[in-house]
Image 1 (cartoon, rainbow, N blue to C red):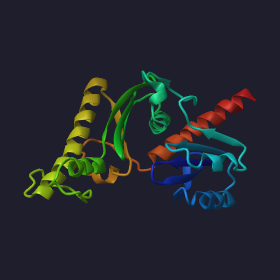
Image 2 (cartoon, rainbow, N blue to C red; image 1 turned 90 degrees about the horizontal axis):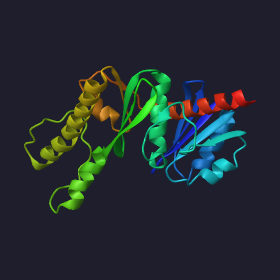
Image 3 (cartoon, rainbow, N blue to C red; image 1 turned 135 degrees about the horizontal axis):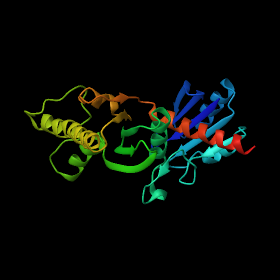
Image 4 (spheres, one colour; image 1 turned 60 degrees about the horizontal axis):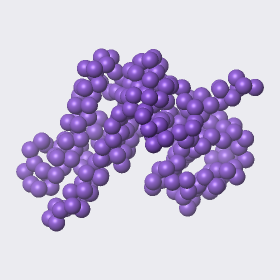
Length: 247
């Protein structure tokens, strides 16, 4: 079995995969990570693990784990596609994994992955297996926070649940419309641009805010909150196959 460790800015996800099937998922923090990892290793026969980290706070714990095959995802990790990004060393490991997931699940097809998290990332891989790049913009929470931070009178709002009317009839409603509907308009515009330029394009939506946005997107899309974990598992599986060929 494969163990995937996704260490973000605020929480750590631990996912166990049997081939491509997610069989266990645990969410932890840095303080409780050692207990969580011991729990996982006690329940499952882990042969390989991959860690994707933006902080490197638990790498020293992973180093000491009794797992023979460990992969620390970085820009030096081999991937199953051609990376045409002009600054590959600055490409986030999460974006690398998302593109790998797209190529693994939709091989030889054009795919656009939209990750609606702290920031919204757009990543495109064409049917020739070439990663062309994409875009990065502020996420929903960041947009609300920025209006409150950079003005004196606008309140600090939470992300609203459900749909929001386009015409706000109060300051609160106007801010909600500007952020949520503005994000939807941005995504629809991006999707339409890629579809016009590349014709048949798979659209994958993932990330913490995916459920808040998917109902307002009329385009045909695949919504998968665990797509990043599946992408990381695809990277690890690719590494395992490459190493097996060398033996």
